[in-house]
Image (cartoon, rainbow, N blue to C red):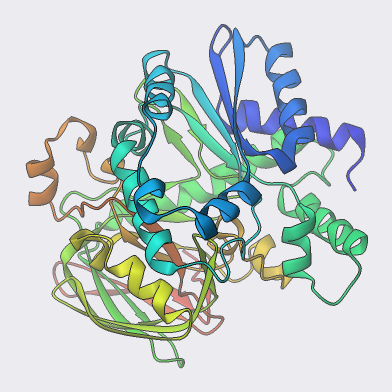
Length: 411
């Protein structure tokens, strides 16, 4: 377990480096009831730093499971008006958002994949304006995580629960740089390093990224017209920076949704909507999945890929070296926030408007003309193995090595 000082530092990082809350601003903390203690600590820190009001948006994953097992698909897809009104309030008041992602990765094990997929699509449609506000950086937001008993036991099934939780905390201490003398300074230095990599990629303005490894991945990903590589600290529409994911190790941009060809094999299991999907292989042609298979969770993958037309293409490509603190931990977290930052990844579904120049000011048609993908989904999956090679291919056909054997080339 972290010391009280470390816990306070963690909460402060979420408020400052993460959401970059401003004095007088309203803060929304979104988390499961299992994380109440840490949510309260964040709330206390936010008030100390000048929050006008802290609002809690509680979730209860156990109740969600009970509902998924017992309620009809029609009932699950009936999103109450008060939930929509609540998120509209967050937008109107320009709240900053702090989410605590710490769910049981297998919470929906044994549930009907069709009901899960349908409920997810219905929720995405109902809360489309809220999703747009976050994906376009109209609202500043961040995601952090703390261990829970169910999650820790999923990660470390062969040791006692208390020991599993302690082991999770020990890993997070290093991953979140809470074992340093000054975590805020350590994060600032880390953010600077990631931005130097993004600047290098932007300066080269590659047309394609080519990924290959010995596990069957041979994928060419065209990049969106006027794409921009982003890293760690992003810029809100209000001109203030924020760090959406903590931890974060990625440099990312938008693929061109008609210029993706080849085959990719996942490197780590995907935990999506309470189901584990693993051993999956995808074949792309002209930007869309034309064939797929999975050794584990085939029906869940099928449900995801049938959610809407856009989910068959990609909305993100992110580069992460194998020597990141998360990768070096050797732990499979079954949590996308962590696992995506241990491995290069792609994302099914929607592109972030911020990953093309002027994207926030474009219409849907203009974004589409740049090759940006549109979907109700945005689901990251990990593809970076320890032997992956990645090249940037210029418009003139020149090839620039970016990764060799899973790590950044020195440049």
